[in-house]
Image (cartoon, rainbow, N blue to C red; front, side, top):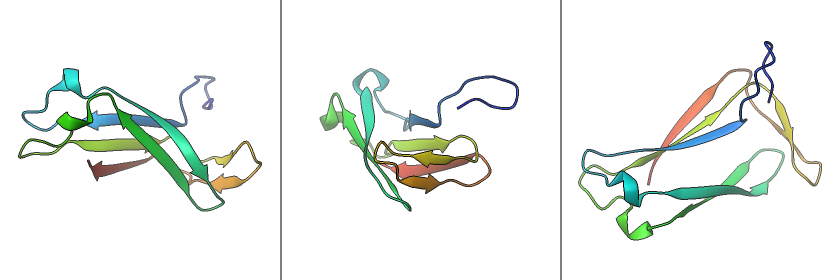
Length: 93
């Protein structure tokens, strides 16, 4: 996505928010979009070491940021309308 100043930035940004005792070196991950409809977007998160995810008293969270107010199109041509502002969501892992 390009903002009004010509700066390119990703449309979707993900980040693992660590708990107090989380081992950051063990929480590497990748993600991909597995399904997209007119009203939803499904992400698949694959951790390199899933055995270390949320094993401590304070679990990690996944932060997902949608940048911009755009309409996204899937490869199949489906449109997904996004709000006209930056939206960040947190989900416990």
